[in-house]
Length: 313
Image (tube, rainbow, N blue to C red; front, side, top):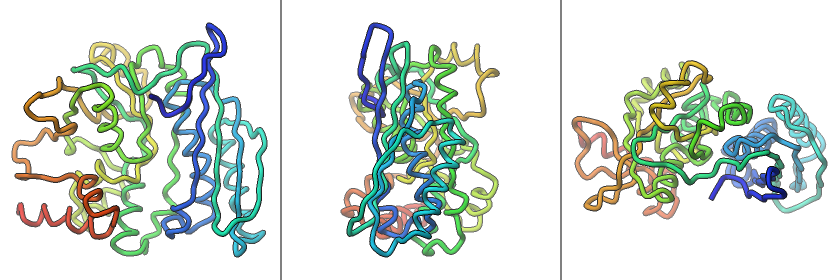
């Protein structure tokens, strides 16, 4: 139960492997810029590996190209990949390319560790969940703008998350479990809650957004919960840590935010996530819940979710 598949080769030698694809994001038009395709293809796999605490051995890349995506598009994608690999300090091992009815870009990353890599198991009541990274909210803002305004505000060019594997690699001995937020913070916490039989309490009012996202949020009157519940995340590495350990090392850690606190599971209320608010919305339904009930019809689900806040005013 980890973001990567983990193989123990020897007593003190572990191999972490993850594979991921960029496909529907291209077909749907969510990602329109070929540079985004290349960057996010690398970043998604880098994010998975970062959660384990492994050091990357390298990456394999497979690209299947739609006929209309000729040399100009391919050059932009490969150039973006090369820049991303350099930025994330990941060697390129090789790969493959071919043609298909739609463009699909797949990356496979390999990493190694001398100690057992982190998994999603190990969270206990009282533990804190930290999320690393400063670019908070850009992924959700891109998704919101795409659904409501067809991406007129060019959020895609700003969506360049930076999951730094070196953070967990350096501080792994202090962390108890980990997960990446590629599917959103809410989804990540819900997964951890299910695996570890705990509940999480979030105070969304404490979330610090990127400056440009905060301006966008204010202008469009977007509830802060949206940036937690959107299923397009910012690829933060989220780790569990005991509060006493956190108090001892927090000044050594790179920029991070406390996203949630693990609570003992309530036998009378099996909700995985709750918000630490004085006046919660009565019978509140999360965006992921409404999305599932709407058969993954994103625009309809978003509008239905937003209507809850209008009724509460």
